[in-house]
Every structure is written in C-alpha cells, then in structure tokens.
Length: 287
Image (tube, rainbow, N blue to C red; front, side, top):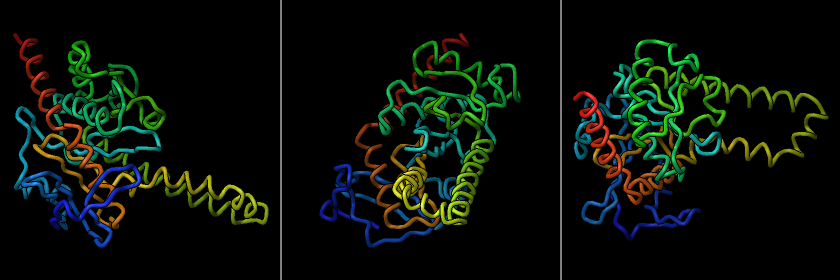
C-alpha cells in the first residue's frame, strides 16, 4: 500500500498520518519513510522471525556497529515501559543487552516522552551475582555506559516487578522477554474473564458492574495493543513497526502514527550516535 501526502488524516493526538480506515491486514510490517515525499506501508503476511531473517529488509539495513535487529514490546498506559527484546533475538550475547538498553532509552525518550529513562535488566533476583552467565556479564557491561551517562542503568529487576514502575526500559534476551510478554497477555486475559464471570454471577455483581462500567472500559483500553499499533524494530536504518497478525484498521493507523513519531523525533540518528559512543567507550576500556 503506497499513499501520497494527499491521502492523509489527522488523528486524535493531532498527528497527520496516512488514511488506513479502509484496510485490514493479516501479519503485517509497516515500513515508514519519506522517500520521494511518499508514505510507504508494506503489508507482509509473514512472522516476525521469517521476515527479519529471510527478507533482510530490502530497503533497510542494520545501523553500523550493531549486531542484531531488536524487537521491543511497549505498554503505554499499563505501566508505560518498553520490553526489549521480546522475541526477535532468542540467543544473545551480553553486549547485545547493552545495545538493547541504549536503543530502548532513545525510543522511550523521543517517542514516549520519558526523560532520562531508567534501564532495568530482567533477572531472577536483584543481586548482581544471580542468574546465568549472560545476565551476570550483561550487568557488568551495563555499568560502563551508565558511568559515562549513556544509559541510566538501575540494576536487576525481577519478573514480578516488571509492571511495577521499576524501569522505563526492561532489557531481556528474546527468549525470556517473549515468555514475559506471552505470560502477561495470558494473565491479563484470564483476570478479565474471571472478573466478568464473578460480576455477572449475581444481581449485586451486575449492579456493581453497571456502576463501574466506564472504569472497566478504561482499564481494558489501557491494555489494548490496538492503541499502540505494533512493536518497533530498532537498530535498522529506518522506522519499522511490526503489527500483530490480526491487526484491524485502527491498529494499522496507530502503527503508522508510531512510525511517524520515530521519524519526526530522529530516533534512528540518535541510536546511530549512541551506538558509536558505546563502541568508543568499549574501545577505550579495552585499551
């Protein structure tokens, strides 16, 4: 789907974005850029893994000095934090997690408006001596960019505290991050079903549900992935948002809106500068 600047609408936040009201996508990735003053939306019926590794982004390449593509899942209202990685990179090296923290910080500062984002490392305990060698080594490596002011590292975060406003960027390898993501989605879905069943099981419950109807709607919306649109793929030379396979028109609309924020705020340029600074800091340490 390719649209010129003439096919634009204004969203509720005042952003001018392509009109996607007539489209429904299955398994789509939204590429957003300003090549030749056009807005490009590429809808691909592939999984995240097959698309990123098989197609290699025909228009986009990795930022220099980066090792892998990073996928971040963001909760905007229910906890306002970015989980990175959440499935794109299952096998990680410690230096990857440092890069995750840097890119997540840039994204949260420029797209979510969080000043000096706190970076936490997902772990089984808060002590730096716990977990596998990957987390131990990553913890040590994160100290250097923190001391140089490149990352605001706040230490290890346990899974139970992920949504407790302990960090703005939650760093994890793709395997652990995806487990957190899927488990959280399942728990939230189960809780809403239990709550609905309990309230509708009696007359008093039905009255209470009616009185709290607006509250429940607001709570449900805060966990609605449609309002986010998709997950950002960070580390490439461009703005890429991966939408869910069952995305409706509103979700695609929000994905493009998110991509526009990435473009307008210069996220890619700032990630490129940050990665270069990380490489310089690492080289100085080694020397």
